[in-house]
Length: 170
Image (cartoon, rainbow, N blue to C red; front, side):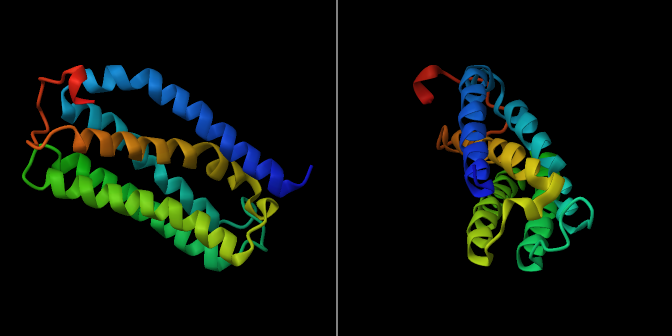
């Protein structure tokens, strides 16, 4: 089986598995006060600093294209910082704008990495141990971005501590 096929199958299965996990967690998340649900999702993204491993020879192949590795690494680091800033600002007036900035930047960064990988001819073997970041963590992060977006779009009236979630809103 070709490495590219293994890579694609791994990403597809990870999206399916994390999607099932998210489907089971969503009812509990939507029952929480919005700030608490968002806090849990943002905390996952605080670990996106692991994308810096794309810059570490030995973790990744020396052949990993810098045109892919640098934007992926620093895009992830930026997303981690934005997640932490959004987390700190959650209950302030800056909470909503920071959540939107984090959501657009973070999801855009992940999608750009897939686009850029195709553009530069990224080979799965060039990722070395970081293969698991792309095949396990990235699908989780994409799905949690969708959950953040759902929480942001739940109601026209934004209140991070809103407690009156009802099933009709989802």
